[in-house]
Length: 123
Image (cartoon, rainbow, N blue to C red; front, side):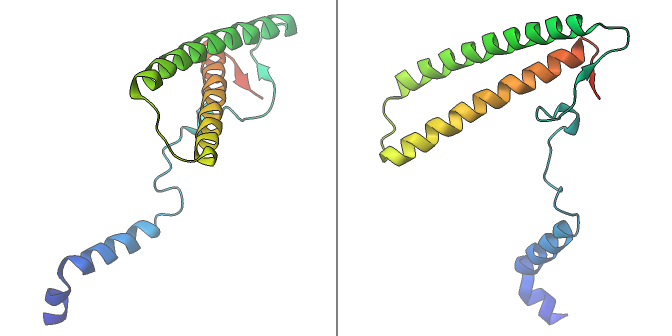
């Protein structure tokens, strides 16, 4: 047992890492798969006409765009008070691209949640 005593916390960390790697690649994936904004297939709801689906979808997109626009204004206000972050042009462009992607993803997630609240599912 002296070998294990001398290893101490390091051995515990190695064993914990090995145990967690055995859990699979989704061990830390907390994404709600039901809220997949990238899911394909039409929105369906029994007894609903195509026109009603289109109208509901447009309403959800309107809500999503308004919410994201509000988020963008808040972020702009926060950015104005925080001052310049510095960094290279490439870093600023990457940050801007990541921010825009985040807004687009948020829009899609809001639409998905809105349609689900209205009783729709993906086929």
